[in-house]
Amino acid sequence: MEKKRYHHGNLKECLIEAGIDLINKEGEKHFSLRKVAALCGVSNAAPYSHFKSKEELLITMQNYVTDQFTAELKKSIKGEDLDSPTAIIKLGKSYVMFFIRNPQYFEFLFSQSFVRVNLNLNDDGSNNYPPFELLRKTTFRVLGKMGMPKEKIKDTVISEWATVHGLAAIATMEGISYDYDWEQKIEDIIVHK
Image 1 (cartoon, one colour):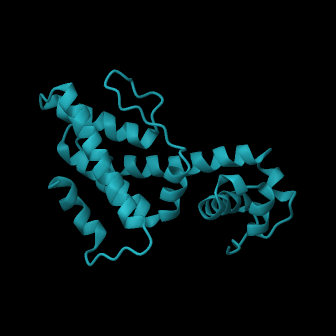
Image 2: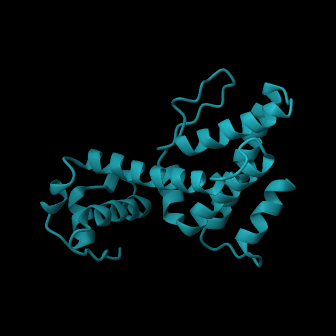
C-alpha cells in the first residue's frame, strides 16, 4: 500500500484519506489507527491528536465523504428551477460524476454498508443517506407537481437511483473500457433509460 504524503497542518485529512484507502484495500476488520498512521508516515500516537479511537476516525471518514458528495449534488442544482425535470437530471449526472472523480469513495461507502436508505413510501426520509434523500425529495417535488401518483413516483425514484448508482458502479470498476466521455454520455443515458 502506498504511503500518503503528510504535509504539516494537513494531518487530519491525510488520516481520513489514508483510512479510506486502507478500508478499500484491507476491509474494516484490518483497520487500525496504527496502520493509518504508518500510511501517513507519522508516529502511532499522532492520530490521537485528532481522533479518540478508530471508531471516531471511521465516523469522520463517512461524514467527510458524505459532506463532499452532498455539497457536490447541491452545487449541481444551485440556481436551477427545483420544480423542473432538469433538476433531477443534473442531480443524476452529478451523482455519477462525483464518483468518477472519486472512485475510492464509491467503494468505501457502498462496499462497507455505511449507507442507509428507506424506500418505503410512508417514510419521511429523515434517516436516509443525505445524498439519496436530496435525490428522492427533488424527484417527489418535480413529479408531484406534474401530477404523478405517489406510488409511481416511488417507483421512479428507485429506477432513477438504480440507474445513476449502477452507472457510478460501472464507471468506477477497474478494467472497464468505454469509448465515450462519461460526462457527455451520462445525461443521455439518464434521460433515455
